[in-house]
Image (cartoon, rainbow, N blue to C red; front, side, top):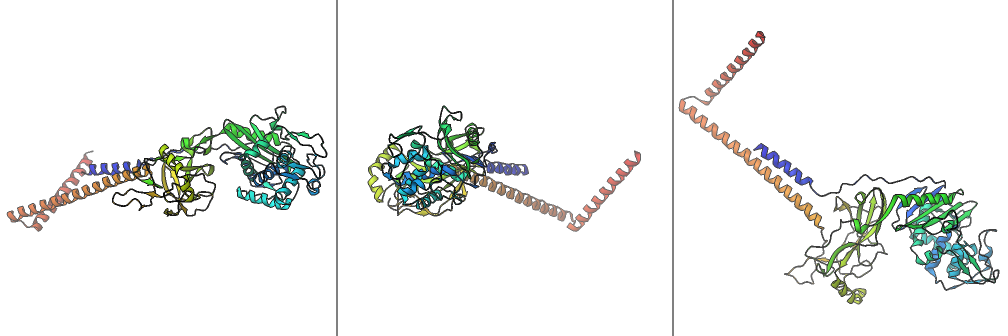
Length: 541
């Protein structure tokens, strides 16, 4: 019986340990690039992942790479066809000998023309004129630049002018400049201008026949020894205080990189090549939805935001969401956290944001969305006007896909570990706040359909884990009961034997005390005899 009990205990332990889990490979992240510049970084533009960095949060003078931010703010705040008049201050409030497109006071160019002069020719007078056109003065425009930097997450930078000329209050870090470059790359107008190999400026006072300008970035030019295959743009910079600075954008095999070199010592191009080569050779950008199978389809008998499961294809990860991983590894080394605190720019239909990590390193984010069946999409399109007005029954209404009647649930950050949604945790990059989620209701045949019951969809893996634990607990409980019954039976048999012995003694006329005394004498005699035999045996030897 004891063997059976031990077997059941072992079986219970085995069942308790078979909860599904992923065995994560040891995270090995390539981390060496021999660059000579004081500061440098290479970042995946699609995911924001820092592949390598040197002094990435140290502030340096940026010089003319400042104009990337200038162009981004201008494009976001005015039309390309607006006309810009060059003031005396715009033309002459620059350092002597600094870069120029030959524009003069009184010249009138379109914003488009000025942007080409700004990014290709690095014209300081164009930077000043654009700043005055957008904000009224270069000082007011600098405040707009700082506000934009803050919105992008920059923390180590401050802008004092639109050109990048020397100023003790004008500085950036490599990390912040990579964030700015990434934002610029996501702007189609900026990328179109910045990747142009030449542009013809209109007639001006100093150039009565107009003039053709070319980019200063040598990695764009096939006839230059610095040419880099896949380079799609960037910006050069130099001042006596900043040294050589360089921002470069490159794309190969579906992967887009941003590199930044600060305070270089005439090695800005070799440093940039080393950074880009390191990124392309050691890393890959993959679609999160192609690898992450944690978040299962909705298969329970339930409705979400008024849609039944027949109308829902399930949960899906936004196919445009990507993560960056080393080529020498795979997705099994990736962990994730899910949060229902959605940012303001979350795509329509998103219900949660997933953050992916490689150890402590952020490697990308994705949005979890409700996917509809074809017939449900037709219904949703037909009711789009109701959704926009927040009418009852809309699938997703309001800024974050919820309506005023939906039940409010505190924001949760759920760590995907061992392939399941686990305990609540807080995303390290933002404070969690409450977030209204799409209404989730269970069907009830005994109630009116207008009485919703708010709840979460529990993933099937959670039910499997709970079932395994329940079975294991049941087996353990049965084992304990069987063991107790066995002990009780043995005790009853012992008492019965004792009663029978007493009955026999009483029949023979011997009391219990006399029987115990006889038994003790018998044991003493047996012990003495055994000792004597052992002594005699030793003497014979």
